[in-house]
Each structure stands twice: as C-alpha cells, then as structure tokens.
Length: 192
Image 1: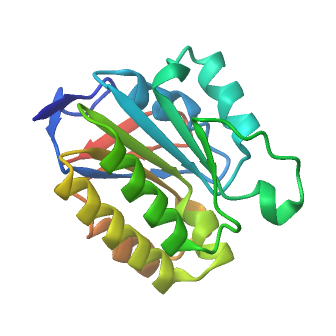
Image 2: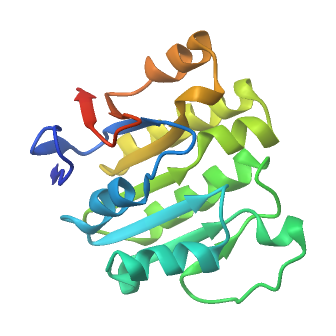
C-alpha cells in the first residue's frame, strides 16, 4: 500500500513500511512538516511525544487542523513531571521518556488495534537520546522500523541536527529509507 506525501521536495508517495528521518535545526519549526505528514491519506495516526505533553500535542493538531478523531497521542512526559493526566480513549501514557520499550509496546498496540492507512510521528529522538542514551534510542528506532514494516504503516522521526555530532547523525540516517532535511531558512530537501 502506498501513502501520499504532502511535503515539499519529497516523492509524491512512499510505500508502506517506510521510515523517514526528519533532520531539523534545534530551533526549527517542525510542526508544519509533522502535521502535513499526518493529515494526508491517513485513517489513523499516532503521535509519540518525548518533547511535549498530550495537551500541547492536542493544541498543535487543532491549530493545524489535523483530524483529532483519528489521532492517538502517546504522552511520555506528564507522569514523570507530575502533571495532571486527562485520561481519554485517544491519549495514552508511558511513565517516562527513557522507557523506550514501553513506548514501542504502545506503538505496537496502536498498530494492532487499528486498520487502514496508519502513520506514526516520533517527536523526538533527540529527547529520547537525552533521557535514555544513543544506543537505546537506536534500539527503539530499529523496533519501530520493524513495526512499520510488519503493519504496512509509515513513520517520521525527528532528530535535531545541531545537537548531535556527525557520527551520531550518520548512525541514525543509515537506518531510514528516506531523510527529509529542514534548513535554517525553512527550505526542505529530501533523499529517498
């Protein structure tokens, strides 16, 4: 099954099982790319956030007019930070952003519980590296990419370019079928 891509300077469509690495400046505005990815040709979507709370993700989806009825949000911050959690059918929680196995288990449950065209965004691998470490983040990526392949889904994973050295960027880059780069000036380039 193919999925449309509505992001400038990328292929018109990608096959199910494709993982995309989104390399961006640490101060880059990725919400537009993220929501363009999520809102096109999708039956159900999962937003994994190690950077913001579910409430902030909901605000982003609403602002960019992504159909929230199709969205499940995985919040990895609220429990650790002691925030009030609003339980809901479409909001799930993992106790900490360093619990990559719990995050992957929730993603697997989402993929198994939904049919049709499924998309996942992971914002962000940089935060996962910060809370866990680089090797655990790479293990998480490998598990997610296997899940995408098994379920004919697609995913986009954020990584802040300026925060990591070139060797780290390359370790992540080589695992993905496609890389989208957001420049400081907002220009988008890609390699698939």
